[in-house]
Length: 110
Length: 120
Image (tube, rainbow over all chains, first blue to last red; front, side, top):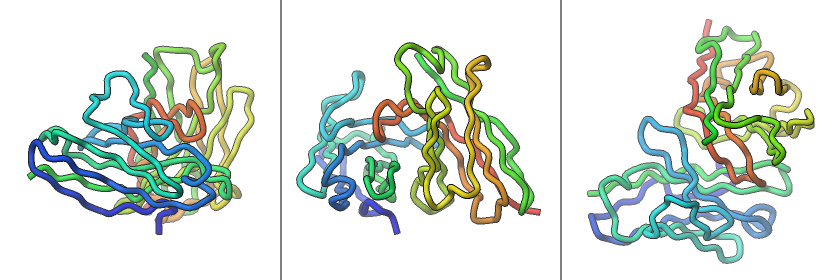
């Protein structure tokens, strides 16, 4: 059982907007920043969103993040086939004194 | 641009010690802006698990669930940091990743990962 909870799968058609959610607790999301990572098949994970809603340079503005209380969301608008990947949330947990991760959501572009 | 690359044996026997090295290129591991250097793993079908991190001064933080078996070290002269996990079992079979921790879970970049299988 992951400390951060994500739905295992999501799907959408090209051009659609999809949202991936991440649920945690007061010791992680509720009191620390959330990060979102994208892992394309056969590649290293890459940060998509940092500090809840910030995009690193080079990440398209189709990707956006938000946080409310102990939950966070990643939204992808204008879905493209190259967005087919696994996405997972992460953040610091004060109880663990370490980083915790969601189980990952596999996004399929139909 | 900083890049990381894991290396080490892909097969370890049960009860033995798993040893991995992460080589850092494109920047100094002990630059003026110092960071934590982190190890994680992902068993097949499971979530990523944070193993721990090491600062360039040698200060470490470990996952409590692995603390009794884990040690990390840093070699600034070789621009590398390393992981040792003792008394391994099949449950330690996973893809192991190293990454730079910019701040409390902001992990960038990551290495490609290395599959380590524990089997006799």
